[in-house]
Image: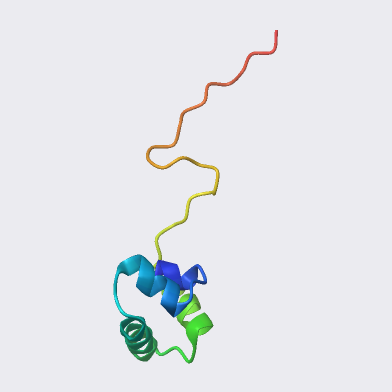
Length: 75
């Protein structure tokens, strides 16, 4: 769901997950039916409303635990 929401194509999602293109298409179609969405954009909006998406981290933030920065002292 997160890859779909991020704007990846079905083919890109299939490559990343190691499944077939048609498998992704069928799963997206099934999700649209289950969530009552009329298209991919509506599916993303509905998933967000339901809290089904993982929060994304800012692009420059390293993976893992966020670093704790100490405030600098101006002397």
